[in-house]
Length: 201
Ligand SMILES: CC(C)(COP(=O)(O)OP(=O)(O)OC[C@H]1O[C@@H](n2cnc3c(N)ncnc32)[C@H](O)[C@@H]1OP(=O)(O)O)[C@@H](O)C(=O)NCCC(=O)NCCS
Image 1 (cartoon, rainbow, N blue to C red):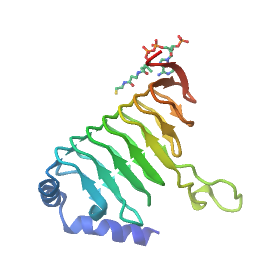
Image 2 (image 1 turned 45 degrees about the horizontal axis):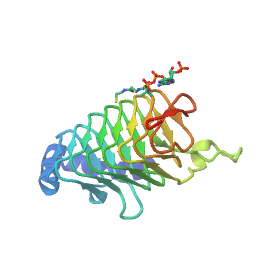
Image 3 (image 1 turned 90 degrees about the vertical axis):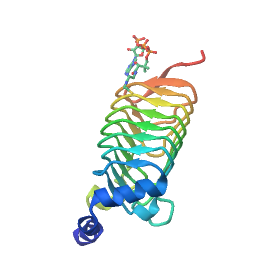
């Protein structure tokens, strides 16, 4: 495993980030910070007008889906986005605050105009745990689709499990753990997250 990882990271030493990121900024008509770390670049698509601060984006995927970020998005410093052999699809005008970690596993889809507060963990893995003769880390994960609807606001320190569907224009309160689907327009909070009211009620 370490050997494969080494082979993945080795090209980083050969092409310095600033030069590569400048070339990618020109190609996608976006702004990519010189210290942003982009892996498996051929599977990454970025919309015009998007700003990537010094984040880490790793489109490690088996097919061509990879990671696609829409137009006019703002991905702040220290966000980590990893396809994890699945895919991540982000709509236009999405803002993701500092220290968020987002994983593909299956397919993670984030609608347009979504706001994600700092320190969130989105589509965290559901590890298989059935076997007792081998450690959890060797049992693999369930590859589930995760969806966050357009216009939704996710507060700080929220965890969203993979396989969950958060509706459109919903609000998830700070610190929530979202382990079940949340309907459109709901305001949900707590551990586990429960609907406290609806925005249109
Ligand atoms: C979810 C949120 C929007 C609700 O705001 P609100 O509609 O003004 O709700 P209220 O403050 O009236 O609270 C309603 C009830 O929900 C509870 N509640 C509100 N937010 C909560 C949270 N994050 N976790 C647990 N319970 C929460 C309140 O304690 C209250 O319960 P009670 O009726 O038993 O007293 C807000 O509390 C929140 O968490 N905002 C996120 C802020 C943030 O993370 N910003 C980061 C910048 S992106």
